Image (cartoon, rainbow, N blue to C red; front, top):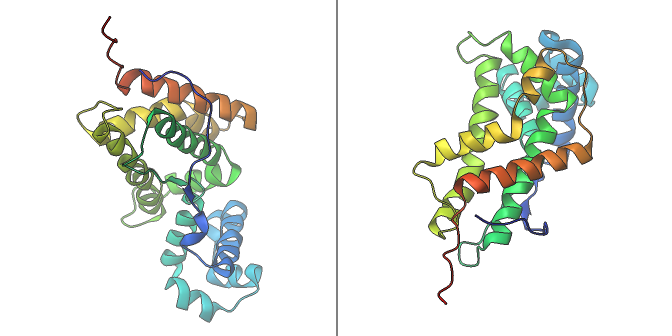
Length: 221
C-alpha cells in the first residue's frame, strides 16, 4: 500500500478547453436559471439572462436539449482531469491525481447547482433522452471515463492492482461520495466546508489505495 504523502501539484487540464469564455458565461447563466426556474428554462430566458441572441444559442447548441447537455457538461467540467505521464508515474504523482479528482468530485456534487440539477434530473428519469439521461451520461458516466485512464496507468505502472477499471472506479466513487449526495438530494441542510471536503477526499484516497495499492515487496536482508 502507498503511504500518506505530501500533496503535490500536477498538471490539470483546464475546464475552459471545451467552451469559449463567452460560451461559459452563457452556460453559467443557463445553470443559474435551471436552479431558479427548473423546468421553466427556455432559450428566450437564457438569451435574456446572458445578454445574447437566441440565434446565437441555436448556432452554438442546436436546440434546448443541446443547451441542457452543454450546461451539464460545463458543470461536470469542474471536476478536472488529471494529466499523468505514464513514463514518470510514481506513487506520489498517482496519489496526487486521485486526491485531486476526489476533491473536485466531492466539491462539485455538494454544490448548490449540482444538487438542484440532480433533483430536476430525477423528475425526468424515465424519459428517453431527457434531462435524467443527459445528467447520467455527462455526469456519472463521464466521471468514469475521465478517471479510469488514470487508474489504468497506475495499474500498468504496477502501482495499483485491480481486474476491472469500471469496478475499481465504482469503488472509488462510493468511497468519495458516500451518503453525501443522497442526503443533499433529500433536503439535508448540511454544507461541507472546504476543509471537510479536503479531509474527506484525503480519507477516500487513502481507503482506495489501501484496497488497490500495490504493497512494496520487503527488501532482502
